[in-house]
Image 1 (cartoon, one colour):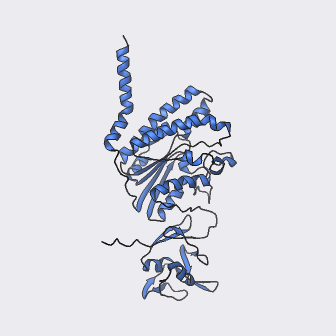
Image 2 (cartoon, rainbow, N blue to C red):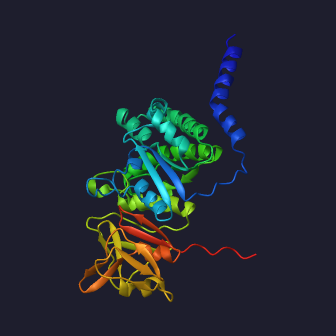
Image 3 (cartoon, rainbow, N blue to C red):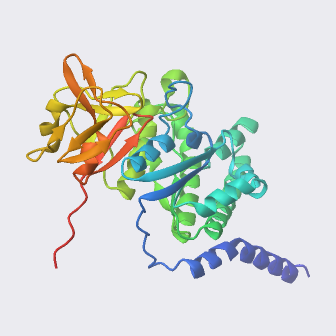
Length: 366
C-alpha cells in the first residue's frame, strides 16, 4: 500500500537534487566559450585553509606565498588587479554554504569578480574521520552530503556571477604512497574529486588537478616536515602555476622573502642586468650605464643632473617623484619615466619587489 507514495517521494527528492543541474544546463550550454581575462580584474578567493594560505611560509607576519597571493602577483605584473581572500580555515562544505547565506559581503564580492577560485572538501573528510574514526557508513554519508553541497555551492556562485572564470581545486592526498594513511584516505578523496568534476562540468568551472599534481611528490609539496598536511610554499606555488598556465600561459615564480632584491621582468620574462636595481623612496632606480642593456639597440637619450627632480628623455622634460641619485659613483634614474616615454607599460608588485616592463604588441597589418 505504501509503494506508490514512496515512489512519488523518491522521484520528488531526485527532482530536487537535479534541479540545480537542470537550471545550469539551461544557463550554460556546452559550447559556451571561456571569456578572455581582462587586464583590470577583481579576483575573489573563497574556501578553506588552503585558500587562506596555510602551510606557506610566513614573511613579515603574513602568508604572502599562499597560492592566492602568488596568483594575484601573476595578475599584477600584467595589469591592475584587486584580490579579496575570503578563505576561512576549517570550513566543511556545509559550513561554507552557511557562510554564503549569512555573509552578504561574500555574495557582493563574488558577483563583481572576474576571477574566482574555490577550495572546499578536504575538511569534510578530516572532520568525519575525526568524529567517527574508521566508520565507513559515516564517511559515505558525509561524502553523499558533499556531492549535493558542491553542486549547490557552484550553483549559487554561478547565480551570482555567470561570467567569471571559476576554478575549483581538487582535494589531494597529503601522505606519500608508501604511507598506510595514503591508502586509507584515497577512496574518499577520489569520491570527493569525482563530485567536483561532475559539478564543475555542469557549471563551467575549471578543475585544478591538485591530486595528480601532488601525487608521488607529497614530501616535496606538502608541509609534512612540520607535521602539517597543508601545502608548503612549493605546493602553493604549484597550484598557482597550474591556474596561471590556463589564464595567462606564462608563470614566473615571485616568492616573497625577507630582505629581497628587486626583480626585473621584460615582457614577463626575467631579465638580469650587470648590476642590481635600487629601491629608494618607494621608487625603482636603474643606473645610467644599464639603459643600453635594458632597452637594447635604441636606448633613450637621457639628460640629468644629480639631485634634480626632473630629467629629459629624448628631449622631453619629465618631472620625477624622487630625485636622481648617486650611489657608489654611479648615477641612478627612476626606471618608470624613460620606460613610459618609450611607450612601455610598467607594472609594479610591491610584495615581491617586482617590476615588469611590457612592450605593447604592434597592431596587426591588414
